[in-house]
Amino acid sequence: EAGVAQSPRYKIIEKRQSVAFWCNPISGHATLYWYQQILGQGPKLLIQFQNNGVVDDSQLPKDRFSAERLKGVDSTLKIQPAKLEDSAVYLCASMPGGAWNEQFFGPGTRLTVL
Amino acid sequence: AQSVTQPDIHITVSEGASLELRCNYSYGATPYLFWYVQSPGQGLQLLLKYFSGDTLVQGIKGFEAEFKRSQSSFNLRKPSVHWSDAAEYFCAVGAMEYGNKLVFGAGTILRVKS
Image (cartoon, rainbow over all chains, first blue to last red; front, side, top):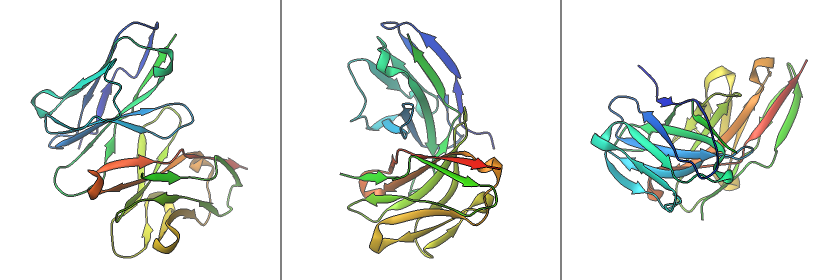
């Protein structure tokens, strides 16, 4: 079974530029998560999707971050404009739908904002 | 609010010695408990999980953890550490009452000395 795929793996941008990350979850997984992991901290949830609907985006900085999950499969996370403090690893995870289960994580995208 | 505390930022143990990583949580619901490991530049890999039943759970790579409800703890243990265990370890807690979201601790970096 293929795991969660993310691209790009690394990205370096200047502040005020925009950037987008892509995630392809495990086939059939209804729930998709985006996490932000700042150096020295644990992952923090940004947004949770169930199929193509948003379940929780309470910690997403909506003035600059946006995310979508068209057709309930792939997802993109966008930052526009980026700030220095957005430098982090962005992790995507997926989970089968229904009752609570294990979340499967992708390798992450390391973003550096200069 | 839900919170997860990993009191030790860094731990150093000798190869072959035993290991215990601490995790305490504050949750207003029956928790689901997880330990993940992250090697440099890698995504999160699940070591073990507790949903219900036997409070001593076995995981991969020889790790085990014990859920102690009275102490709100879920400590990770390994009887004999290998050099390849050097990584960062994250405790995470979730609950269906909180929408199947994970809250992570800040992580414990394990160093293994030969």
